[in-house]
Image (tube, rainbow, N blue to C red; front, side):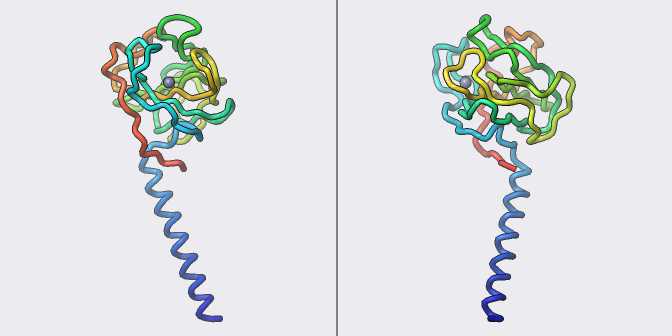
Length: 173
Ligand SMILES: [Zn+2]
């Protein structure tokens, strides 16, 4: 009995250590932008975007799924984000966050919970997934951009060079 109890205690300690390490390493990575399936990667050639390639990642998730800030930052814009005109863009509740050195944008949202000027933390809920704008299925179009924010919702980032691959090294917690 004593031995079995020792084994059980050792296994529990190992499991706790494993969870602690996972949590600690997860905090060093960007938080996932939503709990969904990243089904359409950055950089794929597409005809429907003016740059000719997919400027972000598409995370497919049901409407209403929370959207999270991937890193700490300041909200710089909430509203319509259309590259060419109404109906072909990112919907009326898009969000842009300044992280100091790069921006992230979150589009097709059903709702936005933040306002320009709000400070946000990594993993904080900022809105919810939707199907607004140019979208055939509820999804989050998530972008990471190193170009400056122009302040113009029709062309939020000048040129096509600033869009970068958000990567896949996500921390979930
Ligand atoms: Zn997309």
